[in-house]
Length: 610
Image (tube, rainbow, N blue to C red):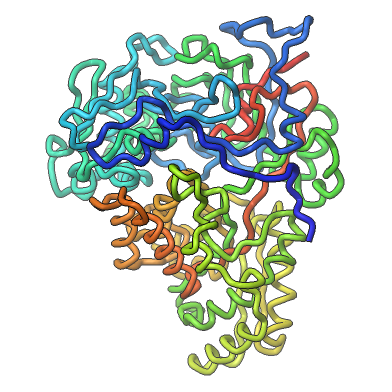
């Protein structure tokens, strides 16, 4: 089968031996002073399109100016919804939050534009291990950083953000993951649950330019930086946050409109019609303004992909994500960029739906798993087949550069023919119907009304009945906008019959596959499916916080076990690894020489050459 990825290999490249020492050190040990740096190898298209050379008539000059040059024009099928980092839901919102906000640490392109580095943004330097046990960390802040109105941004803003994040009354969506994700903050979850006072929480102001974090377990500095680089941990403004607060302090309008928003990041929100259009302009006071060539970014919400393609063809937007049909048309066009897979698209199953008790039957879910022809689906969508959860790009051992999927433990969780086994599927299906006393199953799959989900859903609607028997199985389809579908599947906690089947896919750092399983832990606040398993939580905690987690092979075993615990009972059904395809206008000059994690193609760092 033809593999639609330009370039010979999409391989992880690791930077600097000091990086390896930092990530391999034990908690409390001496970590490297180098920042994390990593990337994917350049695709043929990306290498051709990326340009770091200036011409004699370069309108941008030798260095970026405070006002910048040129407007990058984008279109999105997703609505921004809110710029509040404490409550946002979709990943597209997080992109805009990062454009207009500061976090303590963030991901930047390396100087040679081939890697991504994790380093201080509001933080002036790497975290300091105060006691040498990896449990008390001080972070020095940059002096002179301001909000767009000129007000100082300092430790008071950081501590206020932390306190509001964990406020029990606000019950912010992102609170539990701030309390415990890559690191676990002392008493943070207890405060969020109303079980202790703020003074008991391990988050302190030392002075105007220093904050301190106390963690439950020992960590290395890379874990601390990674935790604080999450978009949900961007700093909020007290004046505007309080301005939008309701009377009983259970909700705020912060980040819902220009009236309740103030910027501090690379760009300033110049104008904003929510769910329609947003205009950013370059922030001349941004700490790293010399990385930004653009004068601004214009984003229009255009939910129909064919309309987006028309806008691109008419020269009204500067890049467009290609649908499967458009990719077939433009596959050999040199303007096409292909991003390597960093997420697995999977089927989400509502096992507690009272109207469909058969979804709680393990054999029935396994029948769906083995009845899914992943190679056929990937051929239709130009993605890669996947009967696993951890993507092929994820590294399990930095010292050797070993990918999890290349280990014996990773291979053990895969099956021949990407687990497509119609005979086994039919046998399991019949056994499930017999166990539940069911004659016929009719399910509804909800899916995004744009993109590959349409193709995949329609394929399953035809193929599954062919295996199970059309007289015994029927799959109905219900299309809806992406944001609506996401809200619907996440509402299972209060509405158990919210959905039956849907689609999901989580993106996480390639260098921490053990942390990627947080999406299925009991405490994850934005769970797609009702999977609650104490044993799974224990393995996750051991991999992320256990005292022996840095010992050789421990995290490898834990990652394999968590993947197995989801795959064997078919809690979710992985189908494909996503490969995004874009078409870029000639007037946009990429600064990145290849796609890299976190900064991807580096749209914020491009030049407009006319």
